[in-house]
Length: 243
Image (cartoon, rainbow, N blue to C red; front, side):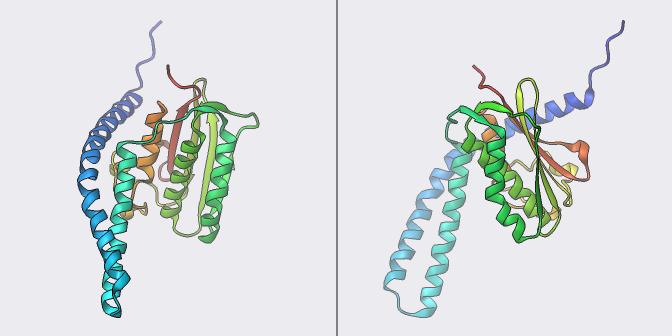
């Protein structure tokens, strides 16, 4: 009996993810070196501007110094995100439940969703999905996915968090009915500082954080292109740490 031919689309997707992971690993090495070089001058600029601001009485100069300080701190926060990407904290795996991670995410993100009149829903199986992972990091990753969808929608719409599991993995997906993710952007949306504003996506480290946390847990994060034109990002984490 002839065997079924291999799924070329699946193998292509796997190869694309491998190339993406290799690229991001190279960016991590670059980010670690660059962040050290940039961080010290930024800290000096911020501290000097703050010191001058304390003794300045001229309103125009105070405004200029405050602007310098604010922009230096903005750069400092970006460097902090870059360092988190380059040298993320090691996960502290403990027994946890996917429903608790989702509930924490809902509590944190509901205020922002309500503010822009976006419906935030949770779909989960009746049984508990238990895993051995760092619940705090997974909550951070899931919040970043929801925030990415909120930025895409801007106002109204719906975001659905779905929980599921396979024999070996816990799965959290976030789907929104916003403008979707263009095919040409799928391979770069996890890059640090990638701007997807042209497609309604945000700017920053949200999806990069998800990738970093997934990698640290031996998992994966990817765009499910089968739901196009909608946007669905899937976070897949092993139920137990790999030994």
